[in-house]
Length: 293
Image 1 (tube, rainbow, N blue to C red):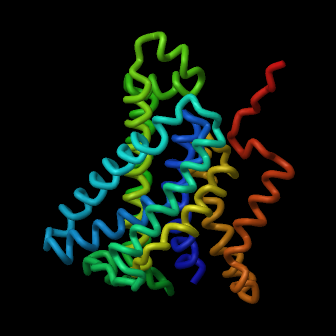
Image 2: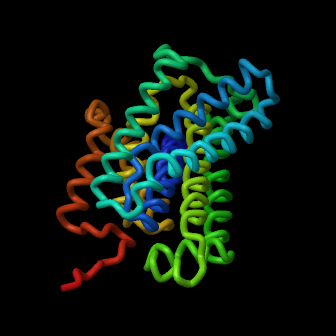
């Protein structure tokens, strides 16, 4: 039983961490909390649903198409909602992010209706197998493995490629990086594209793990992933991943050891957020920024 809960916690934490990385990438470059990020998770799940049900695409091809489509949509959102506000006060971009989130959710209700829809799950992902006294499904193993692969690719891009070098330069000083000849808007668009692609992948795995989708399905995972990013140190990719894993284990294991608190499972995340802001505002791996006088 403990082994089953351990893998449930690992799966949930991996999903939180993957979503949190999108938050931390955008914040690291623009100092912007992209509150529409959770809605990209929802769009990834819906694009997979329509790809398999409406257009009858093979499941694997539908996954790729959904991720690419959401990535392009994330670049479009940056171009429409955030790029015109690059030099505006940060509060303007923050308000724009909230407005984009509400718009996407409302548009999804109009286009997709508010009725929950089932998601096709390949048999090889949901056929249970026994390990000792625990029954596991392959999905609980696939999610952490896919997450590790995606995070590994992302770290390679960020630390071993020229676009990654440009991202790190922009995160430190956007104007100096622009003067060095870097096409800043193109790199920022690339960052949005990568971040939203990770959100889409998270949304697909979330829909496969919890096979029901609806227009507001990204709200709570998005909020909790933001808490995970703050806990790990927003702006740090490893911190976001570790924060997501910690949050997943806190939620699952707290209920496992204290089942009477199962009704307060969602509250654990917000208690963690308050504790982090009170005692370590920079998070586990965040950098302390000195105020310039």
